[in-house]
Length: 150
Image 1 (spheres, rainbow, N blue to C red):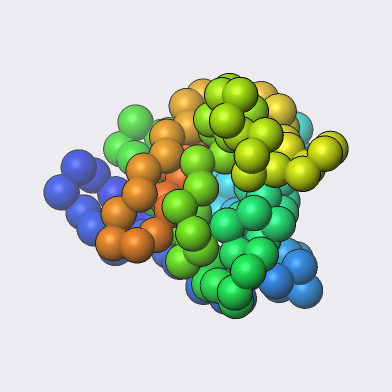
Image 2: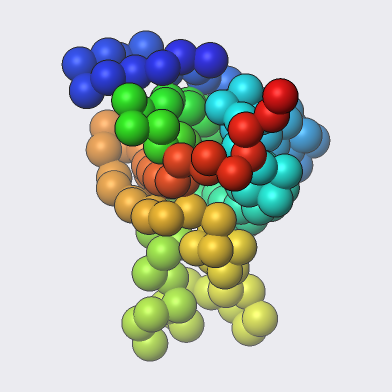
C-alpha cells in the first residue's frame, strides 16, 4: 500500500482488459487495498460491490464496441481517505449522468441504463472526467476508524 501526501504521485495500480473474466482481479485488488487500510468489513464489501458495478458499466457501455483496457489505482491521502481511480480506454461515457437527461434514451436500449446506486452508497464522493482519451472515475472513501483490526 502507498500512503501519499499531496505531493506524492505513485499509487498502487492494476491494469487489465475490459472483460468480465478479469473482474475478480479488479475487485480483489481494491478490496485488498481497503483491508490493508484497516477499513471495516462492511466498507470493504461495499467498496468491492461498487467496483464491480463500475467495471460492469464500463464493459457494457464504454467498451462494448471495441476491446478496451481498465486501470485502477488506489492512494491513501494523509487524512486517511482512500482514493480509488478507475480509468478506461472506452468511448466517452459518464455513467454518473447517464440516466439524467432524456437524450440518454437515444444511447441506451430498453432496460439498458447503467446502475450507480451501489457506487454512490460506498463512496463519499465520486467524480468523472475525460482526459487523454480516457474516462476517469475517482471514488473518495472516507477514513474508516471503526475498521481498525488488532
